Length: 270
DNA sequence: CAGATATGACAAC
DNA sequence: TTGTCCTATCTGG
Picture 1: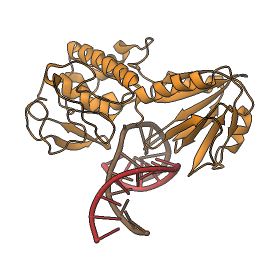
Picture 2: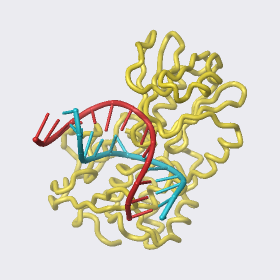
Picture 3: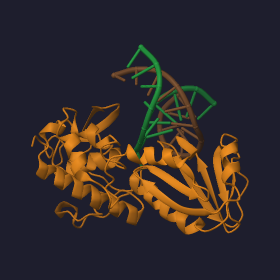
């Protein structure tokens, strides 16, 4: 669920729902009671998304910082909120709409300097116009680490997760294991532009579809297929299945504590 | 019903 | 590199 496109959509949705409104906040689960008390009754002024980090800004320089991690989810609905089901860390209500948050890695109030520090340690976000891809490439081209790990490093590129990285490397024809040092400036330009296009499409559609969302010759005429994550992909989590382009079985291997997937035929050395 | 798994990140070895 | 955390859902028995 949560790569950068999801966070951007949530920021847009929450802005639409709550900006300029006085919200009531609570923590039915009890793990954010003190924080909820501080924002309850305040007016939400704006929302923002930096990489995978979601910010709700309230009057009085109070910023709610949320990071969904691997399991975090929001649910919402119109009208009055139903009795909380499960572990609801945070509930925001206006009377017109309610919003529940479960399972986040982070749900905390930050001071302005803390917000600045948070944003400062994030790399280039393909979904933001203020992103600086040149600095990201400077880090990449200086590293011996595998490109797959570098693109997942949020201090280099922010908002990319395993699906976007895996799929962008497939589309670039590069295996996830080549070193950052071996990535040419041209290859980086192509990957950066592709990440921007793929993630923007993800924001539009609300799911990741790297096969159809951005036009590619091999995707022509292929009907969309629902995956577990709600989209369609070339190689992510398709271990052993035939590559959609050439038919070679998709391979997998550990990568920086995660899993990489690639087609050994389509993704060759630069 | 136990166990495995999940689009993430961090601390501790 | 391994372990830990946060929660829900899907699998197999």
